Image (cartoon, rainbow, N blue to C red):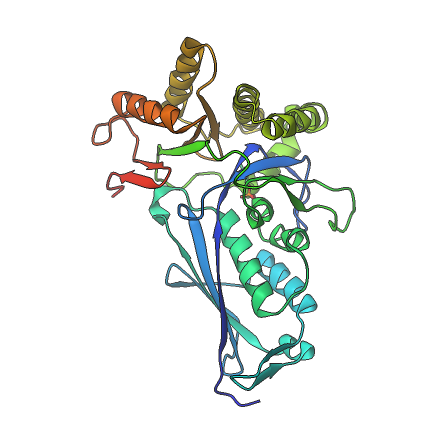
Length: 358
Ligand code: DP6
């Protein structure tokens, strides 16, 4: 085996947005959640990560670049993913290039990883979900890992919980699992992207600033201090997850919207119930909620569902293209870009209207 060769693979993975939220871990190092969660995976043309991984005997250490800047791989989460993948790596042969990597070689060979997000990192939408899912998927291809996508999701989960759901398109459920080693805490696809393809997602970027409390530390504090979280995880989410699965299966937008909004609101209530309280939404987020609630009521049936993650940005899921167009008109009227409305940008379906986030 000469020193001159490089073997590469590239993968692209979209981010996902939870409609039943994951918030709280029962095991911090394996990243095992306190409840099931359900998400929708975005179209890969928006908010996705592209990762190229390379292996060569000429590399002397594992290295990674994110959007062109080198980052450290020393964190436990990266190390856990790399260890799990190396353990499962298989023989790789490229006859044309005269390359043969034996299973045992993967322990000694080093990797270079280059990852890019197709959305402005400054827009406050950077998500570890697409990043870790893409890293694990690309490395699994390079290393000829034979595991299926659900088993790979259990590795991506150890990078960032929400990442396990990005290995599938459509609607995806992360089953919390029961095993102590986390082997059954995996993601499964509920329906593929064609099942409910008239939904249209608009993301209103309320603030491009980095959140003050990361998801990881926020959920740790919630687990330690919130009684409401225990009620949510034991009583509310198990029932809500079943109802959500039914709503998705039957493309029942009224139930879907009611459950999505209720779950987002309960997640933020749980944040408020944390000591000290965590505020992820701001006044603009609250105004968007009021605007959507008012509109849905005036129409007699929901046109749009809203959901907010660990930050003030609104993810708005319209029942179809027409509702999305109307939603956009309303947003532009109430929160015109280039005003002090505090909305930095909109990311809309296959188009983006971006105000310079400065
Ligand atoms: C509010 O997956 O980012 O977006 O597992 O600590 O990396 P770690 O947390 P992360 O948390 C996501 C929380 C959420 C809800 C969700 O995506 O389900």
